[in-house]
Image (cartoon, rainbow, N blue to C red; front, top):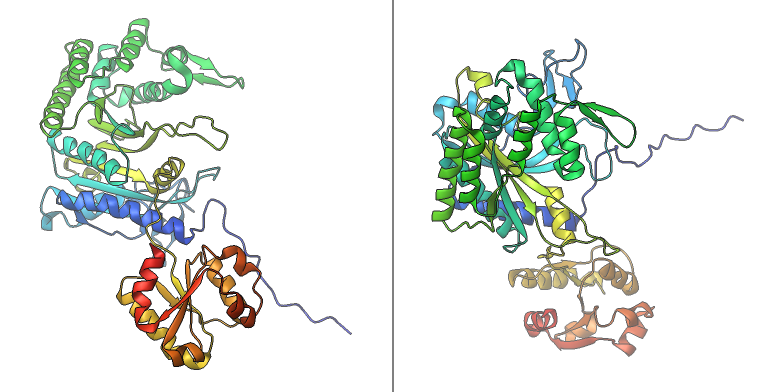
Length: 492
């Protein structure tokens, strides 16, 4: 006799690079996003939500072949044969939205948004293919005043997230300064010099890891790393290398002193001098509003993908002493940043539309806050009302409603099982209080409160309702009308 075919049961598994988020993480994310949103709201920004999918060409991703545009993004072909891609950031959808609604928007258009973004890249430790970003942008705002506001927003978000001054710093640079240095070094600020400029930027970005000697080699002919791999250099001359290295170390703790040093470095370069003037304006606004050098500094080693930006750039960095479980120092580094980008909307409209913005990765920021033990769980576990008698469910739900009206989270146990199982459920929910009432208590107009935190160990040994009634560990019986008052007292 042939065996019956077993029904197909799929294996429960997550796709690589994607994560499940339990309640405590979701609440922490929501609290961090709400903190940032409160800052943006106070500055007059407005919320926006764009769809997860955009047309692939609108995202700036070009088809690698005729079949599938899957380089770096997740894409699919719609029934109208148009390629759609999951957004890989929140800025490109913003540019599309502004271009599509340009004439009807008050400009500058100031918006904030948070949402998941997607990268079709190889996943790794701490590197996900879906993660949440939180952005604020001003589109149609030319001039360094808009950049100064974004820098102040970044610093205010750090405070709103619970960080104290001294635990973070916002570091500011300007693309135009480096452009001026490179022009003076013989690298043209044109398409012809784009690859060489990009190599210079990548070299500077490795300053923390390779040190001045390693960066000097990458600015020149190149270098071989410890694995034996060789990286081609930017092939700057000796004077150019000296100028770039001097630029990366031109920063001073005082913003004004840094500007003076930069003015000497950029020399007669018009673009470099323009960058200095922009920093000077930003400094005056920061100083007038009380943002001292301890909160915002000028740092010429900040590059932040300068190929994307067209002016001031900045990063928010954590300075707190963070250590792993073995007590070893952990360097978190940048947790967010932004800057001026004046070319993105012009892709759609063919005209210059100035823009500046700030963005941070929610998961990365939360990970840092968790290491600093700066995350407070604001939502307490619910009070659990046990169901002794199914005939009394109306009374149980009435008590739950009263507790909720008083601002106390509460739930009635609606599953199956005896009192012991209900106690185990309350333990798993990390509830502090269990409310118990049977027919006898109802007749006496009483309820019993059990403090599960105090009686946790004793509760493990209780196996029956009779034993519960005889031992009564960490519990008290109160008048029914005193329920709210007694619960509040026990919670505090």
